[in-house]
Image (cartoon, rainbow, N blue to C red; front, side, top):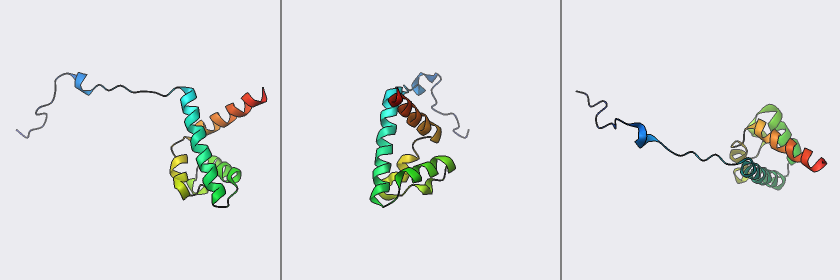
Length: 96
């Protein structure tokens, strides 16, 4: 016997986990916070933040975003389509 499957529980209850999905408002707040940090880091390094963020959104190339203050890793936590959705939603809400 190779020991494979040894001491494995027969029921799956031991493997169940609760997954908490943030509400849309919570997620929008997270996206806003990340975008604000990225914007601040880009300005601090002398870049035009709007141009850099647009370049990132259009190309998907994270090198448009500086590594300064972990801005690149932060923006990569947001899917580009989610980023666009939040930006457009906010813009249209303000236009009402």
